[in-house]
Image 1 (tube, helix red, strand yellow):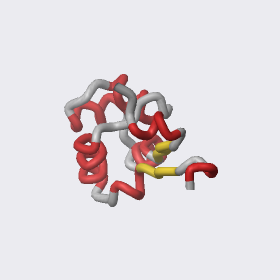
Image 2: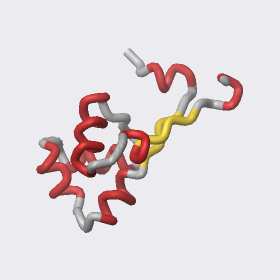
Image 3: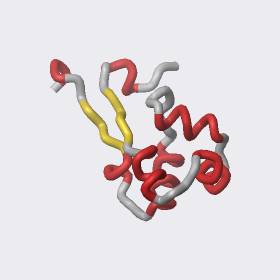
Length: 80
C-alpha cells in the first residue's frame, strides 16, 4: 500500500537534520531518545522515509516545536 503523499506526487520535506545539529545531537543519540534506529533518523533526514504521524509528533515534542516547524508539506503545482 502506497502512502497518500506518494500517490498524489506531493512532497514532505523536513528540517530534522538542521534542528538536530542546532541542538548538538548526533543521529544515534536522537534515535535512542526516540526509541527508533539510527537508520530511521538518517532516512528521515535524507527524505527516503516519511514518518508516521505518531513519530512526527514525538519528534516535534522532543524538540518542543510544532510539527510544521520540522515537517513541510508541499503540494505538486498541478494538484492545487
